[in-house]
Structures are given as structure tokens and as C-alpha cells.
Length: 230
DNA sequence: GCATTAT
DNA sequence: ATAATGCAACGCTTC
DNA sequence: GAAGCG
Ligand SMILES: [Mn+2]
Ligand SMILES: [Mn+2]
Image (cartoon, rainbow, N blue to C red):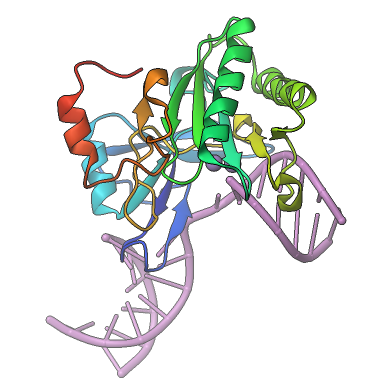
């Protein structure tokens, strides 16, 4: 995982960290991962002791890879990050998320939705650890481009900000080797301390905005939930 | 936040 | 002892 | 190759 650390709080200086230094905190692990020419150690967490260490380090955001340690080169998760451009109303974002969900369903894939904590949504799609990164990346891109082709009024797959006005950017770029997406239940280093929160599809209505759940009100939701929304 | 270096 | 300092990511897209 | 982006 990659960490976003803000030792002096989110208004202080924040920085991303992908590698641990010479001394590794006892509750975390470092594993070697092959890169172009060299091999570099990345950060692994196993349990709540590790999580408490992250708190001590001033970590405000946790960004895991789309694959896990035992099969690094075979991703187990696809992510579609829906980023509404300026002028997009929330009901349109909800409808768009449903379009993505339905398309994935037609392709035989189940998707789960979580708030981002900001303005958009994340669709998380479990996949079998069978294909390599290049194939998975190409598939995600193809799904995004296909949705743009079907609904050019609603979607764009281009990152350029000016192209996003009145559209939803289907950000498939998180499905690259080494790329990350903020974890479910991670806080965001933003005003109000929002949390990226898993929800059921039937909860996704006009009132459930993507910044709805925060450090201060998420515990109430979790206490009231009868089962894991996913 | 922490390890290292300067006072 | 205490204070100051340096450091803690990176890859893809677009132009 | 730099700038923008996440
Ligand atoms: Mn997003
Ligand atoms: Mn995005």
C-alpha cells in the first residue's frame, strides 16, 4: 500500500510514502517487488497492530494495490473511479453509476459501490486472480471507452479537465500495476474528515452524497448496520 | 514522525 | 540535552 | 520533455 501521511494534521505538510526506510516498525512488513530493472520494498499491513502503527505515523489515507501479496502480478480487484466534472448534479452521478453497474453485470461482473469522501464514487469489482496487469488494464479501459461510446452525453474517459465539464470522468487509470485507490473505510485528508464508505446499491439515493460519512458520524452507521453492505 | 546533525 | 534539518512517490496522459 | 493529474 501507499500511505498519505500528515503528521501535523491535514492542514500541515502531507506527503505520500511508498517505501519504508531502513528501520521498519515492528507491526508492519516490507516485501520486495520487481520493477523495471531493480527490486524495491513496499509496505504491507497484516492486522490491527499495523493499523495502530499507521495512526502513530500520522497516516490519514491508506491506498492499497489492486493485487495482494501472494499473487502480486494477478490483480484481484478492478476499480472504476467515477469523477463528476463541474456542472454534474448528484442524481446524474447516481444514474451513471447504475449504468456502469449494469454494463459490468452484462459482462458477468459484480460491482460494489463506496463513497469517495469527496465528489464521486468508487465501483469495486472482484475478479479472479487469473489475468495479468496488462490484460486487466486493457479490459478496464475498454469498458470505459464502451460506456463513452454508448453515452457520450454522460461519460468521458479523458483525463483533461476541460473535457470533463458536464460529464463524468470514468477513471480507469487506477487499474495499472503499482497504481492504487483509497481503501474502503480509509479517512480522507480533507476538511470534515470524510471516510470512503462501502454502501449497498439500494442506499445510493439523492440523500446519500459521497461526503455523507465522516469520522464523526460513521460509527453510528456501523453500529446500526445488521450486515456488511457488500 | 523520526533519524541525524549542529549547538 | 535540546534545537535544527532533511526526508518521507510515482506513473500515465496530454500537449 | 514538461505539465497536469490522481
Ligand atoms: Mn475520484
Ligand atoms: Mn480519479
